[in-house]
Amino acid sequence: MVALVLAGRPGFRVVHLSIQRHHIHLLCEADDRTTLANGVRSLCISAAKRLNRAVTVAGGRPRTGRVFTDRYHATSIATPRQARHALAYVLNNWRRHREDHAGVGERRALVDRYSSGIAFGGWAERDGVPFAWPPRFEPMPIAAPQTWLMKGGWKRGGSPPSLWERPGPLPV
Image 1 (cartoon, rainbow, N blue to C red):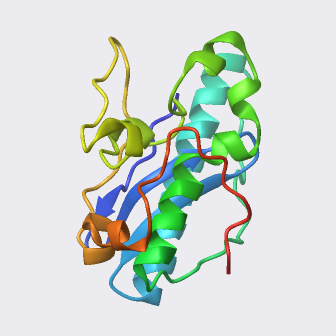
Image 2 (tube, rainbow, N blue to C red):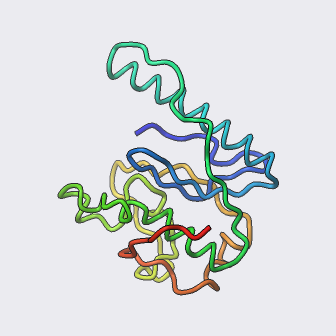
C-alpha cells in the first residue's frame, strides 16, 4: 500500500478517504476554494510520484507520467445531514461498489481496509469507540477534523452511519 501524504497542510486537511479500484473519495476541509484546489493538486502529484516509484520497483521497468486526471468533483458540505451522508458514502463506498463481496477476507471485514473507516469512532455499532488496529496494519494517513460539521455536527444529521449501510448516490 502506498501511503498518501499531505493529509494535513496549512489550510487543507484530508479527514477521511476511501480508495476504490478506479477512483478515490476524499473528505477534505479547506480554508477556501484556492486552498482546496492546491491541496488536491499537491496530493495528486505526491501520490503519483509514489505510485510510479512503487510500480517501477515492483515491475522493474520505469513508470512515469500521469496517474490522475486533472478532474475532480468538489461539493461543499454545509449542513449536518449532508455531512452525515458524506461520511457514510465515503467510508462505506466499498459496499456501494460491492467490494465487500470480492473475496473471503473482505466478506468478513467490517470496514474497508482501504479507507479511514477503522479510525472513525462514530459507527452506530461501535458506540463512539474506534476499532483497535490489527497487527501490522498501517492506517490511512488522515488529519483530525477542525470544522464543527466533521468534528461532530454530522450527528445532528440523522442516525450514525452503520457498518452495514450500503450508500446510494450522493445527493448533489
